[in-house]
Image (cartoon, rainbow, N blue to C red; front, top):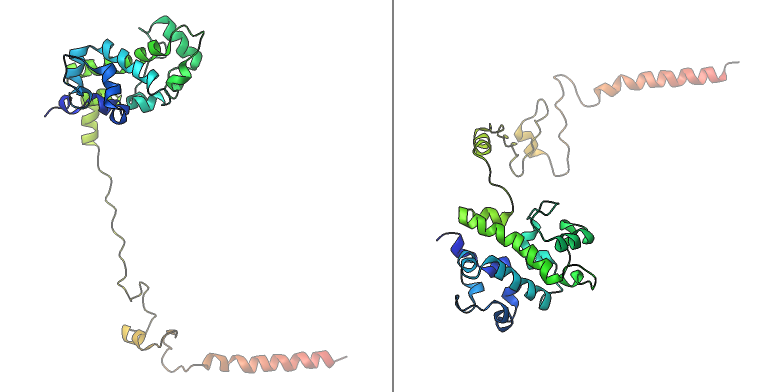
Amino acid sequence: MDAESTICLSDLVPALRWSRPQQVAEMLADPRLPGGWWASVGIGRAMRATGVDWLCERLARLAVGRWDHLPLTDLLPALQVHTVDPAMPGWPDPVRTVVNHLGGWYRLRRLTPCDLQAPAAPASPEVLLTTVFREVFGRLESELASGRPEQALAGGKPATPAQVQAQAQAPAGPASEPVPQAAPGTTSQPFPPGRTRDDLAAVPPGGDLLPALPAGRRPGDHLAAVRPARRAGARTGRRDAHSP
């Protein structure tokens, strides 16, 4: 099944899904298509049957009459990625004037149909929205004809063969080696010199594993040489304090 047969108008205009069918049918019913075609007929077949201009004009009337509280990017999410030449070539002059007055294409996308209503505007909201919708659906029609519907909906350009080849030939970075983890209940630090794993098992909970003493040494031997020196220093200090 090709991509064209899986993309319906309601996929591109989500508001059609939760609108009442009779309200939508008032605008979109067409004898050349079955009832509820916007949710069942591929967009390519629908545009070939109705024509892009007819479809965009009917969607613009629905947007102003039923969905005037929704931003344009909610009405037609493809507008979020659709790019337009700032000069807007091919657009009617009144529509181009209104868009420039509103702040340009990127600001226009964030507005609602209600925001487009101005008594002195040179183009009505329906005319402006028809032009906006034609910008998207016209490109979609040409992309469907060339067999690239996904690219039209994504709003981007396909990668060139040189870019694809460069990505395929790019050297892969060095694989990171996993850091060895210690097993549960063990330590990742080496044992103190002279100690073994059996010594560690014999240490009571909360105790310290002291390093092994050299042969012939006993605990406290290093203090035995320090204590006489401290006593001698203390006696010398007392004699110096009492000397005239």
